[in-house]
Image (tube, rainbow, N blue to C red; front, side, top):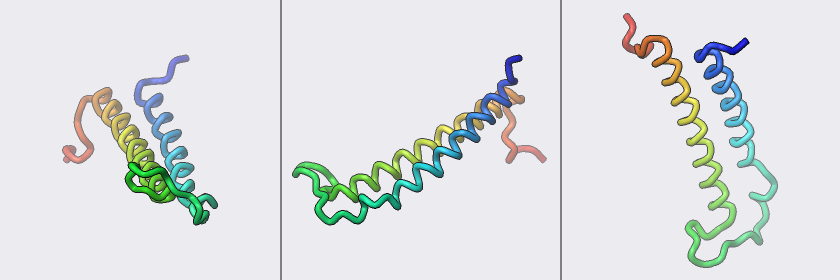
Length: 87
């Protein structure tokens, strides 16, 4: 049986939250301690660790946005009223 839109989105939001934790954990990877990691000129930032950290942060923020957008799908599917607008 097909899940409701609310349930399908809620399940995806749970999966995304789990993925966010895994992405966040990348920042503790041992490659951040390798002093010999440098990028070619023209990259900003030019250290591999700083570049990796910046992209991990972006990936994390995009997952946060995707999770929020699925929340907006739930909101629209259940009448379009924000929980903050309810009295």
